Length: 494
Ligand code: GLU
Image 1 (cartoon, rainbow, N blue to C red):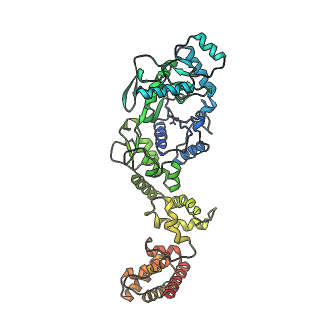
Image 2: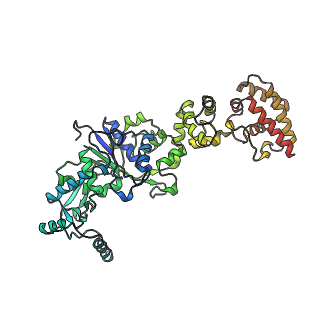
């Protein structure tokens, strides 16, 4: 179709599970290509395999794509002129086209039973022959075929692979790819239940939907000669084919659960930013041509071209992804980052649902203190809990006591610090700093010996952002009461 010659690409997932991160990369490359060329991005759901259908996977796929910012121009929910976009709603179309192929002599009815096919397979395995259909029904006389059909004998429709010659296609990334026809099987087009196979439905839809470029995972290369033969049989021009490089784990194999998250939703739940994932995924197989790594969406769209997509395997490094996440987290404004942290804090009960304006204002003050340290948003509750909790607990009260000091000496330091902090009316960072530094001088101690007990008293931990800003943000009342509590704990214990 592509009436005006413009680019039309599609992402065509089968709803057999949640969106995999590798599939998200495929979707991203399609969207980038569409956006870079002023084209259209289509989402098509390839749901004709009833046995492998997973109930909530369509919802997950849509939600995940949207979360990544990969909104489709045509497809489920948004519609479009070449729908429906669920293959299960197009079954009649495929059956019709399969019949046409039978009529034109490119396909035939096969009445072989599953049992026969299985024993054929076993026999082939035993003799070490390549497995595949032996074409028993390929040359059945028309009379016989009609009789069997009239009797209602179950049948499938198979494609007639040419006896000799080769099928060649030009992959936009890999160049010429050639398959000898004799290695291709007379594959099934239409199953006995009237449902199409992937091969048939995929080709018909790519044609009817006017797809100009098929950009997909390399695992489909072996299917492509079958697709090309189908295009030829229908008399259609195939779209440009581009098979993306495989994504491998750092140890070389396929990315799997044991390496870490694999479904997009797991990355989202862990608190990766969509910006970081998009940036990271874009570089799994594509380069900008220089050493540049950090891109925002507009920059990617401006720089993306298919000819900079390579063919060598792309290695998925979780460390690299974490690095990208940190980079993109630091690029956010405190307001934006606060906003994105809210669901994580809500989940851990640290802010209310719905969040109050007061909590948002408070969080916006906390965020700049932590922005440098957060690697994923799900860490925020742990990093920030002491800003929110009413009561600090000291799981290990000995942490309150600096090295080579006694509990009593620590109590004295905390008492003096308490009285200085109490006397500060304007509880600003600068006032807190000058008060506490004055105390360090007057006690003749090292700064750490004074600051550490205060830090632990107020936060319950030994590492926090800068002490003065932390005290300022937590606020005078809570700082004082926490210090009193710490003094109490030390006195009780010793
Ligand atoms: N439904 C196939 C899949 O799940 C589509 C492959 C293709 O893009 O042609 O990946």
